[in-house]
Amino acid sequence: MKHHPARLIAKKRDGGALSVDELQDLVAGVVDGTLGDAQLGAFLMSVCCNGMTPEETATLTLAMRDSGCVLNHDHIKKKKIDKHSTGGVGDKVSLLLAPLLAAAGVAVPMVSGRGLGHTGGTIDKLASIPGYSTDMSLERFGEVLDQCGYAMLSPSGEIAPADRRMYSTRDISGTVESIPLITSSILSKKLAEGIDGLVMDVKFGRASFMREEHDAVALMEGLVATGRAAGIQMSALLTDMDHPLGLAIGNALEVLEVLAALDGECPDDLRELTLALGVEMLLLADAAPDADTARATLTRLWDDGVVRQVFRDNLELQGGDVRVLDDPSLLGRAPHVVPVEAMRSGFVTDVDPLALGHVVVDLGGGRRQPNDQVDPHVGIVLRKVLGDEVHTGDVIAFVHASTDLAARDSAHAVMLAMPIGDERVRRRALVKQRLA
Image 1: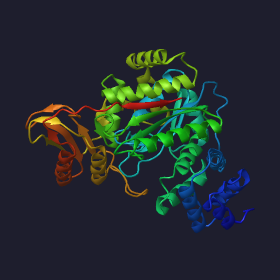
Image 2: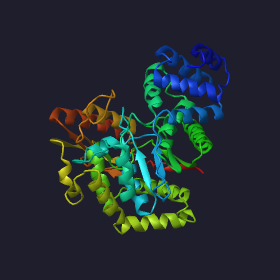
Image 3: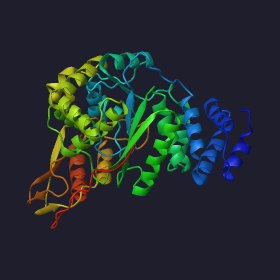
Image 4: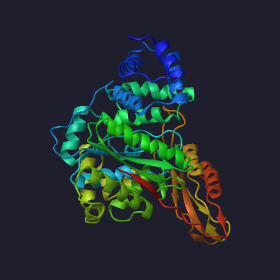
């Protein structure tokens, strides 16, 4: 490193702003190892405690982006627009949104992540489709994008390698919650995709990364400002994650829900959020004059089966078994499926997404550690949602498990996460705020 690491750390510790050259030097040290583990932890803690200016955050983001390969899709004349969610329970929007936008003439290069903890990951959901591969060369990624309008890639060591080391250090150093560090981590990878624009789905609520609305708003504003400073178009929606999205929680079960949605059987909240984010992506791509026109276009493509055909094209190009579209049973099924029954009559007064997410992890459908293996078939399918009336003995959910004991233990936990009461409770608005 050109600069002495301890001096840069002390400068940030004391509230100073680091220059472009200093931040670029720090990131280079992260990648080549000249910035030691203790020094990296100290730097991250100084940022977590003192924050960063918008200019520093943008510089850090770009330096992290440039630490690896930055893709270029100039041979594709369509606008390249992606979406990123800050994570949640039952969030399978990307699997619908990518083919939807591709059907509308927008290119969607999507580098997605694996799940960790109670939040599911797009890559894990796709891995539950027989044969589907998200591990491909960057060259092949560009070819698939060109041929069918969207491509799904798992994280690669070639893209933003600085983030990989910084992210793992944040996880063990108590610095995960820093907004500048979250912002640079998300955007460094997204900017490396070669996109023209990005729509952020920033969630708040019990099962979100930012539980409190004001924290989520601050993150949303930071992401949009930094993305724009880095030279791409940005918009964002603040959305509810105080309840699961859709009815299925668990990888293959969520894919099953997506396949049904492609045929028109889609839970209302999943359809609402997919269309809302799709409208933002079309507007960023200048592919529609206004939101109403964008929504009408996307609705027509979905209802006419065009999106289903694009999904099929992508399945074929990425090695997936296209037969699942007509025979979803090819996804497989957990050996034990047990119902969760209402113990009394009344109304479902809560559907706790955090508790349900932890149930799925306990079943083996999620990770506690990055290297944990995931069972794609386990999970939960809701039959009732917040505010629904139930009678004693009604099935409120099904638990899919690898053993009968696990199924029955989990059924009890699901029952506790879905209490029945005398008063009907309505879900709050799914989309709380828009920033564009």
